[in-house]
Image (cartoon, rainbow, N blue to C red; front, side, top):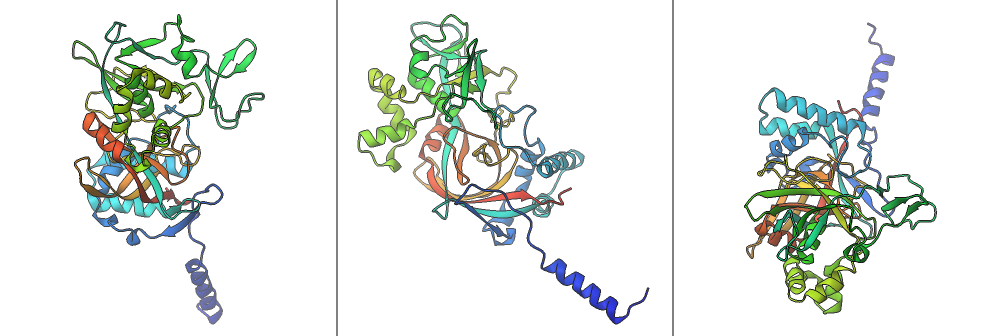
Length: 392
């Protein structure tokens, strides 16, 4: 092969072009938000994390088919990397370095800045457990309902003329789609006679907490535990009762924890009924009897959640299965603060989780997890790992 000056110049030009190519394309964000390319080497704590944990979660798949709640379309490259992770972890144990490089080689890293702010906002959620029964009684009079057959969930692109754009679900009738009964109507008997009751709890406050968290455990009088998973909601807009109570009773928002809200509701049944009904949104459940006791609840992706490794994100923006690096300092639940810097996986969503840097951290199951989750209301640095176009 000839190696004349022209050939050398051509090779030099090609090398120069390769070195000055634009960086990998980042995620598409809502107006006002921005993303900044970042090297994993520039992320504090990146090399210290045990990436095998996130890889194991990621290897289970981006989402079930179908997922529990529809999310943003999963990019083909991301689905391919999920499948590759499954094959990799099935062949042999993966060491920490291989796991770290798996993510570094297949993703570009983007620090997400929300509109008008430098950092994102994180809350916590958990899987509660309540005493309950599969039959109604004076002790357990408050029903939990299965998804009604006439409930239609709005999917991306659905055009529902005549209905409010904010409605995320509707009722199918002979006259067409109509708004579904709100919480007050349901609590007043709108669903009676349909046989939708699947369990009964002690009071509406327990039901409210279960609905806010989206899943839970019901411990029956015989000691058996029934697992419940999200199965839909009536489509009305979610209202934060913590925010309402904070404004009404002059409580600083930072002090309005879930523990404080529940205590206030439990102290006055009439007050609780009226306040809870301000949240017109009403969640339906399904029993998940095949879910192992040691497994986390099922998230919106249709897969089990892992404490302090699973995130709920805005499903209109982020796809399920997306890896994300979280850097935050949050309460431990024991009066101390803890630096949380680790790789997590987007596996869930929630009605109140809206925005590109708004996340809900799954803390765990039970009372201690609930206490800690209620304390988490903190800013954090949010870096998403976006699949490279050339991902295998």
